[in-house]
Length: 365
Image (cartoon, rainbow, N blue to C red; front, side, top):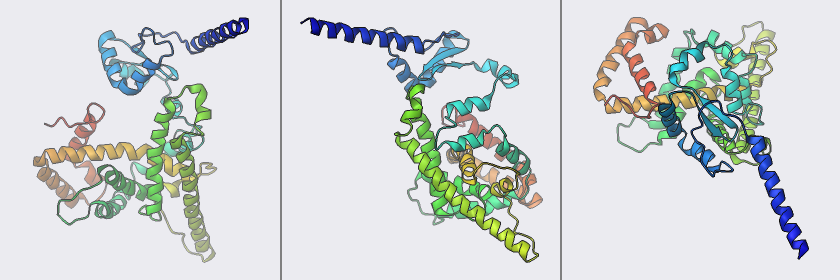
């Protein structure tokens, strides 16, 4: 009898100690009002559930109620949300490191997530290359244009007959092929295996990030080895590295053969070629390509879909847009100057983009 009492007391004492340690190790002093604190929510299950399921409502209601920065309880601890009135302060504050925030939020350093390390590496290699080699590159527009037509044909055809399409996969595929024409170049831009790997990695990566955010920070390095999306990222990263290494070796062989014959080596105008020319570049080509896809595919595809929806809802825009595009191309040819003259198209794209973070629906109507 005494043994049972002792065991019961010991068990409850142990539970009390562990609960106290839990509260002690997870207690942070919030500076601003916490919008998902609930009475009796001892282990904060409701707080985390509300954050995962209703974060947008918590933020909107919290900012409206308090009129100041607010705090969210998240599995990591606390997350501060600032009102839009402070955007200029954030933009000019040198003490705030956006890239470091992204690295933390998206788990740079985890196995299989090396693409995030590459995108936001301290050396800034990839971002610098894109700013210098991409933004004012006149050859880029014709290259993308050559791949858009076949991509549209591949996914949607040109029969003129109404038919069902795979909205998510098709729009992603079209953007992926267009982007690959200037990211990876002619060898793999339209290659089915490469497109499958790249698109799958982007899907799995963001799913893995969401998956990891449901776990406490102290457990993530362990559980990531067993979570399905994180495991898929490791597998796809390995595939990407193997595929891109073949392309790199092919180009190196071409350059060497041209040199042996006293000829000029084939010239490539894509990100792969630019990174191969960077001295002491330690980022694997596969990681670089996945980093580019991760940064570009989702956001660009979302904009592409919204533009298509908005134009479909407002067919009166079609003829003015066609007229502007034709006029600009006739006067300036297919290049950056022609794009700069397409002011109506630019306005339509910006208006569509403006809607995405708010409601995901067009406000033209």
